[in-house]
Length: 178
Image (spheres, rainbow, N blue to C red):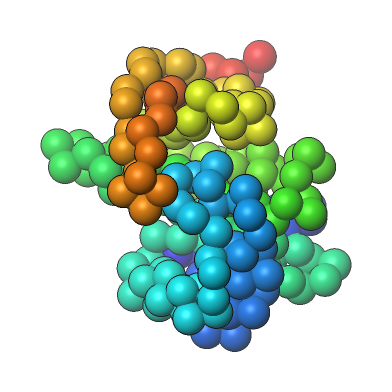
């Protein structure tokens, strides 16, 4: 994945050197649970997830420019086997940075990159009904509500209402002009 920048962030591929930064935010109760996975209980769990990121070129590390620490992740995943031009985005941010606009900043940069520099023309995103922070990110970045589905997290052994949203290249261009 191409390295991207915003005013405060560098979005780049994860590296093995990111293990401790990743563990620092992924081990905090409440962070992973908002995305459907339990917080990491050991650095070995983090190492396994990091290895999956290294083996699949789908997840950006969100690096804070001032500290050079990884403070979150943003995934761009192929979920619709019937449409190669569609991707789903998902994100996680260190609790220390919640409410400061970092996630919308990163999401907007990825939207800009995907719609202007790739053949992607549809993005989807979702949040659990109780995750108001993620809902605000989705609203701020121009997605439109589509429908609600039941999502079962096997890792949490819980079923959630998952609110699904879409954004097309045409919608993004129209919004940008206004």
